[in-house]
Image (tube, rainbow, N blue to C red):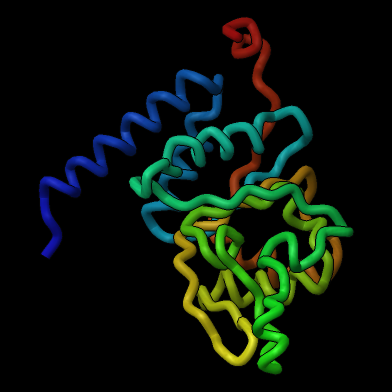
Length: 194
């Protein structure tokens, strides 16, 4: 049974985060609500829009607020993808002791397969090697690590991109983002408020 006090406390924290981010970012209330909804529903969110619309900044600010020091928040992982990003950068280096035991596994501590909230900027710039890992991680919340398949604690993965993916190989990844928000430029009146 869920503790009502804990539920009320969590809702209070969510409302406080919504207020803080709403005050920081002009005309981004819908984005803030979508991020919180993604966390509550354990779904993935893609923010799509042109450069300079605060997509990355708003997600990073949310991560600061839900991430925690001293173990009292979500473990977060934030990374900017390029076509040259390697699996080691996201999932950890290959374990030397594992190789000695003929087990090709990664040391995942503090990496994508070890966190509750992840933000991958320029999401659709990922190489095919990374896509293969991401598809299973996002859909099944599993990570194939050597001889073992590990359950990952991932609650939500947020992505940000300037354009919709055009390549057929990216369709499956795009499909994993159940929540998608288009982020535009701030209006003239919003810009005046800034």
